[in-house]
Length: 440
Image (tube, rainbow, N blue to C red; front, side):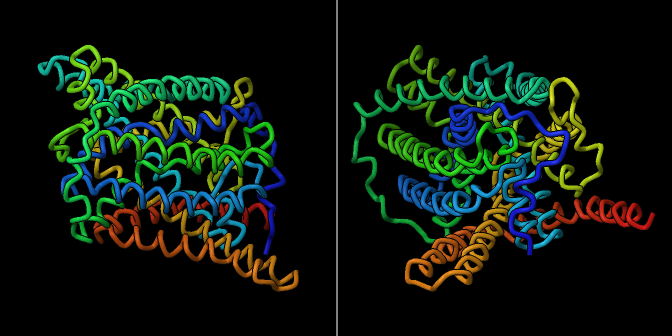
């Protein structure tokens, strides 16, 4: 088996390494904090009430376990690809391709869901008579605009992502401070009373808000020093994001009655606490936050497709890099077009759940890769309790991830399986092309 062939030998021409440590942290936070934390509390509260805070806590713990697995293996990989490369090296080319393909599909589903979140947030700024017209314009405009910005280079995309990370954190902190003054613990009565089935479903849905931490592993090929950046950045990102999420959800339930079913509960709580002016400020902050999250996805999604082409698992033209901007322009164009189609083909919740399921395939294979890497290392050194205990992390992570995956409806898994099969012709074509060249 190969150890790290995909990690240390980036192909030429290469992407420009221009992302700093601050850009990396900002990209990770920006890729996670956005539509989910503002829009999901109303969804997960429908069957759990204030106990939704427990579901969010469990989702954060499972996300942290997966982050630790990514941190354990990502330091060996300095090129664009992330979980796709880990699976390719440790589990074989076919599984690796499927993980890379589903990773790309998942991120497009997520980007499409974010576009819906942006349309919801933008629509709230206009009179109700304009909602029908604003919604589709917002969907198309967001995806097209960010794709065009992405054409110009990762530096511009990273700066946009960093700016919106800072811009989104200010209203979030402001909301938490204001809401804490009106926080009422009596709204948490019945906190521990819920059905286990509803709890599992809510954990699955809310996990969408935790997706994105692995985004920085995908863009390793464009970091200045990925060997030193990746591991600490992953841990910093998940700790910061989980803390912010739990504070926001606590404040929503501690200040607002009847959270269940609300489209934008954070905006509703802000309106109640601060009046029309304060509510409008927070609503604009939410809009900025969702836009920032979308900008991070616009940066990462095409890199997932580019990585497949870079490692000869997609037709070569897909990996074409612009001579001046050093960006994968074909991958950017394809990703934008498919995301637009998905955005018009599904609702916010449906897209979010499918994105979670498709993304968990890479979490599962990454945990397995970490376990295989650990076992390989143990075989080359004297066995100790410490070395054996290192196997606990991927095993626990696998168990927790499989539990979340089991909460999904079989029909949703069928859709994910169909998406996976749609990628196989591209792999067959790549293999056929390689064999044809080799025979000549």
